[in-house]
Structure formats: structure tokens, C-alpha cells
Length: 341
Ligand code: NAD
Ligand code: WQD
Image 1 (cartoon, protein in one colour):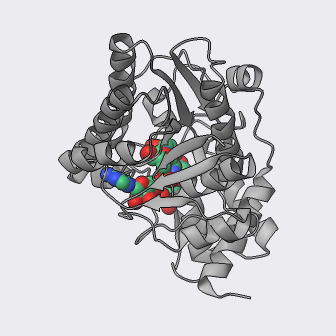
Image 2 (image 1 turned 45 degrees about the vertical axis):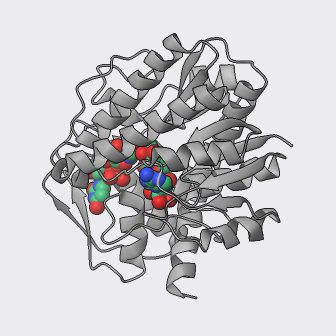
């Protein structure tokens, strides 16, 4: 069985990916320092897939620990590197916390890949690298615009660090996956997203409002140049996203990649407005949502959604879930963790 290291594997996207990797016959080794996830997630992964992944708890910014880890597990064939901090607002207040965590851990991993002969890495990137694209849907060839947060910049710099490393180490290969807006939970509601504190993202804020944890959803802006005036995004089910990682890992371990560094957009290709998401949630959940329109949120782009042609054709992968599937899974998860019948 092929061994895959999943960094950040007890986190939101990592845990769903660990399940899909195990379902596909890979042996998963998770490294996480539990800075934004909890150890119980391992029980959930085991309950769904029947297999408990190997787990090592340490901080990837500690180079000695990273090297000791690769010494202990000499048969790892590829890495999926999810571990990072991801709160855009916090990154503006604490840029060095973000640069240190997101960049130093990547550097340590790339160093170890060279030293311990691990040839492939899948990197979690983001559509944030495109900013507000000039034309939509956005393809992988769209220009990278100046990032509007240290978090976004850490993703841009990470992609550059990977590319520079591949030039210097031709035996290494990488796939950067640029996620659009990952949402939803596993359909079993055994694992899902666990935001700390007040959620910054739309779907967790909606489900927490419906569950009574928040009084009201604020919709940030209704004066955008969109059909209903609210901003447009490409919401992708986290399980569809997880499955794309399995395809990407297979591509690397089977040496089917066509270039040392490949980039794929992971989205659905459908742009949805905030109000469309709210309406769909009310329909799917049967809950009336208390919301009000407020000013735009600084730094938000007006509309962004993916051109998925390259990912669909080259990876043979396509997002399958509908918006209703996504919202039903998010609501089922919220009800489960809040003990709502
Ligand atoms: P998450 O916070 O749920 O998971 C990240 C995990 O990494 C957490 O379990 C955390 O404890 C761990 N971690 C962080 N720093 C670490 C370190 N130094 N050493 C060891 N473990 C560490 O986040 P997520 O939503 O699952 O995101 C996963 C990746 O996808 C991140 O790189 C994120 O930037 C990227 N991404 C996320 C989104 C999104 O909307 N969720 C969108 C685009 C890209
Ligand atoms: C979606 C839409 C908001 C909350 C962020 C990061 C991005 C990526 C994904 C990691 C926007 C609106 C939201 C609320 C609202 N993460 N909204 N009320 O901003 O597209 O992307 O997560 O890489 O880097 O920036 O996602 O879910 O925050 O917002 O009206 O309470 O919902 O204005 O139009 P976003 P989001």
C-alpha cells in the first residue's frame, strides 16, 4: 500500500481527504499540531473509513522534528500539504505569525523531500491568488495579482518557493490545487468544519445563525455589479475537493504529470451570489434565516468563479455535488454538533 503524508490531516479539508485516500486504498499518515483541529477527528475518520490513520503530533515549523519524522517513515511516496493558518483577517493583524507558519513549514517539508527522496507534493493553494480577475470564469493562466492579505501572499509566495525548488531539484514534482470556496461536510455528518470563534466564512455563519448561535447574518454589500447586487463565488463541496486530491496524488505517484509543476483550479464553475446561497439554505433546511444587508467587507472581490476545463479534462475529475447537497450536509453537521434534532 502506498504511504501518503497528509499534513494538517485533522483539519477540515485534510480530514475529508484522509477518508477518500483510505477509501482509495492509500495508507495515510497524518501530521498535525492540533493548532486548529482536535484529536477526536481521528475517531471520525476511522468511523467512516474503517481505518485509523497513523497520527504524529508536532509543529512543522520545527525542522528537527520534520527530519526525524521522515527518518522514521522512509516509505512515504507523496505528501499533501494542507497545514497552514488560513484566517484572512487575523493575517492582516499578525502577518509574521502567518508568514512563519505557512512558509517555514513548507520550506522544511521541501527540504526533507530532497533529503529523504520523497518525489511528489500536492499543495493547498487558493483562488485568492487571482484577486478580482479581469475575465470570468478564471483559468489557471490568469495573472496573479497583488495579494490583499498576508494570508493570500503566503499562498503566492508558497507557489513560488515550490517552483524555485523544482528548478534546483529536478527529481521533485508538485501539483498546486487552487481551491475556490470549500464548504459542506461529510454526508454522514461524522466530520465537518469546526471554526473557532465567530465564523468569517459565509456557510458556517449561515448554519450557526440557523442553529441559534448567532443572532443575524450580515450580508456584506448589495451594490455589486451582479444580478442581485450581492457578491458571487464558486462554492465546492469538501468531499468533491477531497476526491480531487486523490486524483492528484495518483497522478504524482504514477508519474502521469506532464510538467514538474502543475496548477489546477478546483471549483464547480458555477458562480452563486450570497442571496442565492441564503435562499437555497432556507429551502433545503426549512429554516427562515435572520439576515440584514450591511456595507461591503473591505478586501472582498465582486465575483470570482472557476474555469474548470483544465481540471476536468486533464485530471478526469469533476465536482459532482449540487448546492443543495452542500447546504444539506452543512446543516446536518451543524445540527449534529449542536445536538439539534
Ligand atoms: P484547517 O485549519 O481546518 O486545517 C489546517 C490544519 O493544519 C489544522 O488541523 C491545523 O491544526 C494544522 N496546522 C496548521 N499549522 C500547522 C503546523 N505548523 N504544523 C502542524 N500542523 C499545522 O484548514 P482547512 O480549511 O482544512 O485548509 C487546509 C488548507 O487549504 C490550508 O492550507 C488553507 O490555506 C487551504 N485553503 C483553504 C480554504 C478554505 O476555505 N478552507 C480555501 C483555499 C485554500
Ligand atoms: C463568501 C461571500 C462575503 C460572510 C475566503 C478567503 C479565501 C479562501 C476562501 C482560503 C463573500 C460573503 C461572508 C458573512 C457575507 N480561503 N459573506 N457574510 O471571502 O470568498 O474567501 O475563504 O484560501 O482566501 O478570503 O469566502 O465565505 O468569507 O465569503 O455576506 O458573514 O459571502 O462577502 O461575498 P471568501 P467567505
